[in-house]
Image (cartoon, rainbow, N blue to C red; front, top):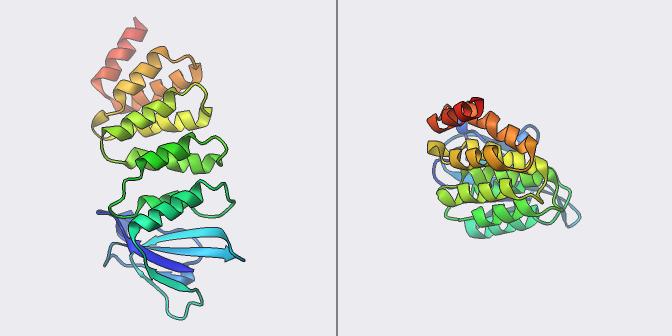
Amino acid sequence: MHLSYPARPAVCGDGPNRISTDGWNEEWEGDCESPTVRIAIRLEGRRVVGVRTYVGGRWRAGSAATDLGPVRPQEAAAYFLELAGSSAELTGDPVLAATLADSVTIWPSLLRLARTTHLPRETRRSAVFWLAQAAGKAAALALDSIARDDRGDSEIRKQALFALSQRPDHEGVPALIRIARSNSDPQLRKTALFWLGQSQDPRALDLFEEILR
């Protein structure tokens, strides 16, 4: 089954920002002409078992898949976020499909997915990764809350630290410094120090000088 919807700005289906994965490529060919998300959904009976995400390009002629045509990006994002939160076993990443939709604010839903303990770890990792790409200080605050959650999964908290280190303009540095100084988990403190070391931010250098003294 195929469907498509408008992509958010600056998303392209070719060149350095190309989005595609191995397999299923007999149904799609790429270009960078239009910012359109194209989703191939694999079904077994009525159950979704796979999601393949492309941007731009076109469906190859002769495909046997049912093409639902264009859908509203808000509806697409809501559907794929619901699919990501269903714990269904499937290939592909419905979180990615949701994040590419135009004119949709999904970071609150990504935060909810990241905190849902019964979901597969890869789903939660994906939610944290894309949360890091969200615009505005709200994303940094959300990542900070994940990292500071003492009841959270250790690997997801470390992923949040990495995501904080990738925030633009060193937005995540204060949170990393706070965790490196005072968090009760020594592994988390070590991880925060590592990413601070990669930042080359003067505030991180001041912290290292403080520790060494």
